[in-house]
Amino acid sequence: MSEQSTERLEAVQAVVDRVTSWQDGATEGTVQDELRKGFSEVGVEVGEDEVRALADAIESKHGAVDAADVVGG
Image 1: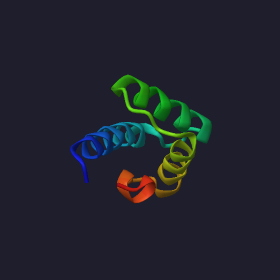
Image 2 (image 1 turned 90 degrees about the vertical axis):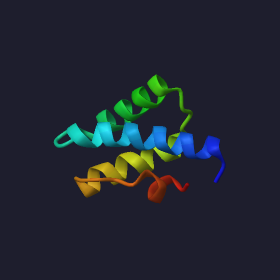
Image 3 (image 1 turned 45 degrees about the horizontal axis):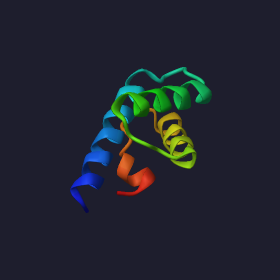
Image 4 (image 1 turned 120 degrees about the vertical axis):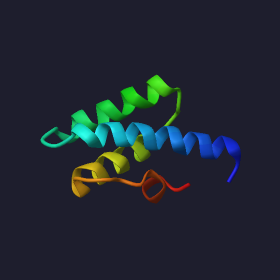
């Protein structure tokens, strides 16, 4: 994995961890919006399919989500 890919995945994981920490009870739309906001804040481009997949994982697991397992890495 390239250094750029590793850095991107680490940034994605940081956002996923932040959103996961408070998501209980949030609607899927809210989780997706917060993921997008977080990715924008850290300057990482994430496709809509990846945002939906991450939001679905966060909603269904109600715990730690490994971004690499969801979006590849």
